[in-house]
Figure (cartoon, rainbow, N blue to C red):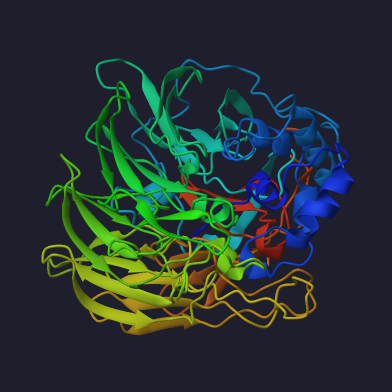
Length: 611
């Protein structure tokens, strides 16, 4: 499971209804036990993470965001009191987002050719390789040591920067926690247009011509399970579709576009809501929804668990429980045009009985969504957030280790024509499957210890020879302070695709005396010929020689910046998305206030400096 930092979700979970409108009293009575004392592995954000959020973001999430369904019993006054207390703010101070930094000239055309250098979607291609060829990267291994910061863009009131950019035709498209999607000039960072969404957008954006028209569109999903198509040049809405009605549903993985069809992965936050003893845990099932890209019309919806959840037993407090449930799809689907298949990776089960399709790779028929084959990596992994909390009432008996898949499968072609489907798991194991033989396991290699926030988290990268895998294994001090353990976690690995043998290894980089630091490498990695890029929870972005792991370049992103849009900008921990490389530029998010990391709100853009 990867629960994003939608702080309101956890506030609603911890804070029961009360008559008083005093935010401090509400917090002390109903929330402090979660946010002040909970184990860091429980995913409950610390007070510092809450304070880094803006009042508007927390209030918006409570009122209309992804957790509005859970907060429906709250009055408006209660929501305002909670938002004001936990953030220490009542309204946004300073300049509004995009009040500064607008492009001086609006454009009716793309600054560059749309078939030129680009990074489109999560994995740069529908195989989700995260490998950018030289002609698209515009950046060579020899130039990497000369990378210099060109501009910074700040997201207002954010404690994390969790949406990766897409770069096409000289424009950059990106979502944010403030329920906005923006189009920026990729070279300067000035703002072309801003589009308001119903909830935060953390998924990558896909770009394509709109069939039957002369328009170009971007496609994305939000944390209320809405999928959108928006005019790429004007920011005008083309269509919006809610792909799943379950109140806990959300879209965290990037929709993948192929041959006029948008394949939308659906995940949820029911692992949090389901942890309340009064909640009938659990009824959500992950799915993939196929939408016509031109109209938004649904072609099919394939649930990862075929069986509809049914009543099972009652918990110790008499609440009816349901199952099977879970198997969310957190990541972007992968397309196999040769076999007419869509591959997805699933999360753990939420409740008993555990599903045989959880913690698994699933192959779906591209035309119908029918299950072609499945390969489960970790059986019997039923888990919710309560398993790490103080009240374990709804935690499944004999619960699993929370070793789900948070990243996309990568479809690769070897030099001899053999094909592999490779993916790393939170268990710390990397798997290679045969897509042409029903997902048969070809090899498995351990690179980490694994854990709820361990192993390999957001994304790996592969060329035709190796898969490059970052290891998190983040750990916390057991002293009740929720502080990161600065001595544990991390490591970057290059594995031979044919054998699974580790051929390149970069050891964890120590933190020293750096505060709120971990050597964990949780963020997705990215690859160009000869170079692998990896960001750390420490805040450092580093580039290594792909052949032998030699350090080529590093940049400390955990600092303050002067942003092109006039918003106070600061970097922090790097987690979630990985670097995007296109047309001689490198872009990275910085700031992740979740899990005790350093908050931040910035997108950084680098270019090659002069000799």
